[in-house]
Image 1 (spheres, each protein chain N blue to C red):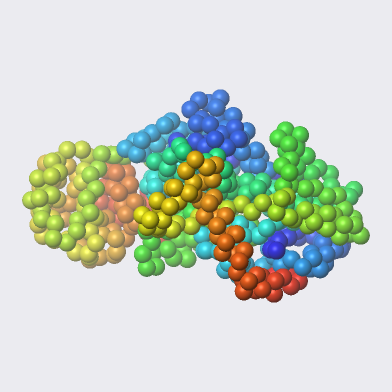
Image 2: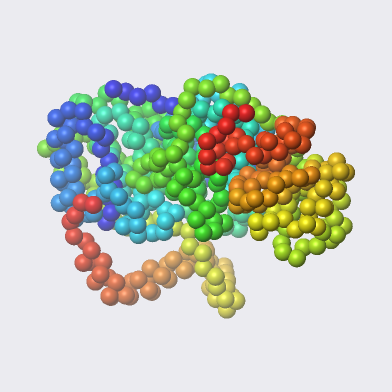
Length: 200
Length: 332
């Protein structure tokens, strides 16, 4: 799992400790954690017209201090329907960036807020990360891929999806996930070997 | 310390991201519907204070009117907005970027142009889920465009994929050959967050000067090797404001030079565009060089609209008015 963790420049020792607490918990989580200092570039895979943010599964934002990047990341997460966690230090936050937004528009289910202390950062993050299952956060196909096909394939897809609720693209996605990736033991073994705790 | 959110004016040119069925999005053909459309993309309010205006529905042949309307709208709101975002079909973006850069002289704020679904990409028959997935990319693109418009940029720029390009030298990535996109052209990237690179013009407090006059009825011909002048002449009677030949080689065939001179004598502006720097000198016709094709076409229209005397028009074509030559902009 790839996560992006954003925290602005800390303006106090208290915030420095808080940011560090979050980073420590994330390091132990088993996820690959990227920060704004990371030069993700091609490391996350995907093609060059994609931003690294598109390739992470979730965004963790420390938003205690007002920061324009926080608003942007929240907006991006909502637009992309990407799971995001906004963490704010208890007693420090005067006004959450989501306060007005939530009252007017309602906060999307993919977005969570957590008020924490450094000692409770782990619990807040665990609660968020435990929601990561297929039912809670279905993978959203966001990568455009052009594939030229033959008449025979086109005819098959048309026949296969006629009078069904499944589109040709949905059918192909399902077939790739279930019949190709699902049955490729070598790839599964490779994926298991990639899940090692590190911070990018 | 709290920061104040910037105010961004969003100009919606039809068809746009608003032509979807996602949430409250509808075709914003009326002023009241623009507000309704904006309510369908509430995440923008987290980035900036966004106001939206709708530019009238226009076809491809009415792009010059769109450029003028957009320029006037930007001028009208120049003092009250911190930045501008224009959303329009992707295929039109290079021309609009070129036009706005020329028309908005002394620009000191960002004008970010973002492409949306092209005309003809109908959604009829597409399952709702596919429409939804398609919308996600467009919404994120809009968030990125608005965010770029809050940054310290003072020029026209194009958001394409995960990068921001200088509007005057922008060529769609699909059309880029060899090293046309240089480091100079890329103003910023979407990495983890938005990062501005070097070489961009910074925001400045400035008085915007509009120069929107242009002669829009230009015939553009790509002159391929072997194209015979009499054939061109027979197929293109001298009407409209002008005719521009795009050449792929560094020289102009003598018969084409004669043809252009004959057009000029008949009162039709004729010009040749050579993409690379060349030693050819204009004599009895106009010469454009060292520009992108989109900029050449638009600048030809624009220069013809700015002056009457051929010498003054040619001088404008040779002057770097908005960074289109990738060099220092000269004051007009």
